[in-house]
Length: 136
Image 1 (cartoon, rainbow, N blue to C red):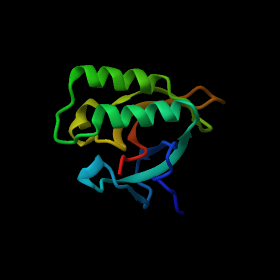
Image 2: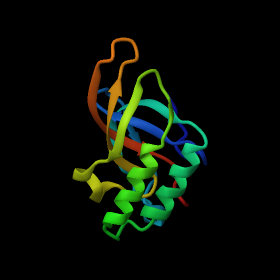
Image 3: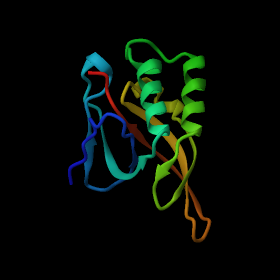
Image 4: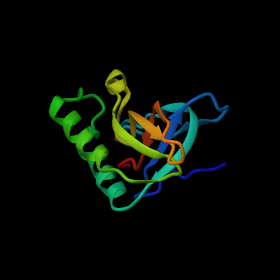
């Protein structure tokens, strides 16, 4: 399966899990980092929330050397709370993963979230990555 993580206004949610598939993308702006995660792509962000997130990824985290400031985390979480995805399960409580802030860079944000099954209402806590456009 090929997923183009360079598409300008698309943001993908990758659930970190044992799947046998590793996803990687160029991230971190001009740092040209190549983080990876084993998991499954479960959703693509819908417009216009994907454009707002892509802009926030660039503005808030384009310099990977700079540690995350509290104001940046709060702004990112505000944008994440407005995200809408094309996905079978409802994705709720999407936030930056506080334990992995140091690994979250432009185009690659570690997040926590809940998946809620629309049929039976069961909710599962999950971790993963939002993979989006990178400035270069």
